[in-house]
Image 1 (tube, rainbow, N blue to C red):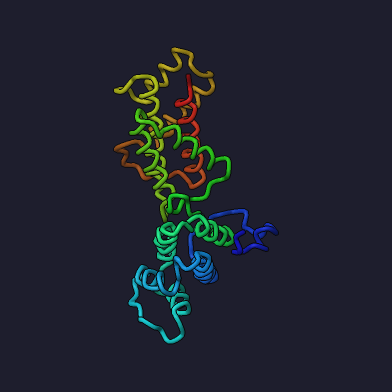
Image 2: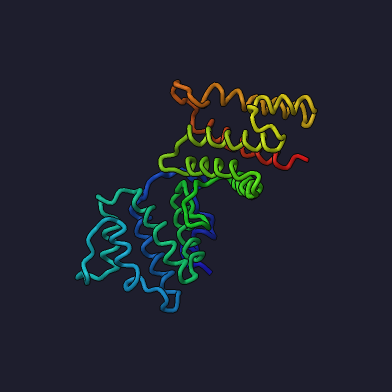
Length: 269
């Protein structure tokens, strides 16, 4: 059982939209409480005052007093909530503490506790099993992304996997790097298409024309792939000097459509 926000989570008191790119004061204090709670469950393998105090304070960029007058927990709470502690540094701290809990086998408990707090405050990211923060997607879209990463985790798709991971990093970034997310995920799609159909020197458009000639996919799906190619050529192609102008919602559609197309092509017989 996880004791963090137990009642409110069960009652469904979680914001429906996860778009907060900030670290509210209350959330910062809840995170300190979570660190102490999870550390206290490790049967002495990890003690927050003994093992994490210096890490936390120094990670935030402050000099740590050996024995602060009001106690180490209060000092940590004060440092986390300082006006000088930019909100991005709070998320740096979340990630920095992951390996400390991983070392004693409590990283999943820590991750669940942190994610309950992030969800309760409508934060745009969750802490992943890899110890990094990832932008929250709708459940079905998240499953699709994970499936695509799995499909690409074979040697033949290694270049596409690197591009897809670059796209995810850009999509998860704070602030989100929209153009890079679109460009990299399209390049991953193009790489998959060229590898799948044995056309290493072709463009994506040429591969789609080959698919049409072979009648390998539904005609309307082929039209969708052509539309993705046109979208790329007109909005975020390599060497374009025009300012990137897709809205956030349009970036979401582009990103997720390319992921769906990666799955389609990689799984196509």
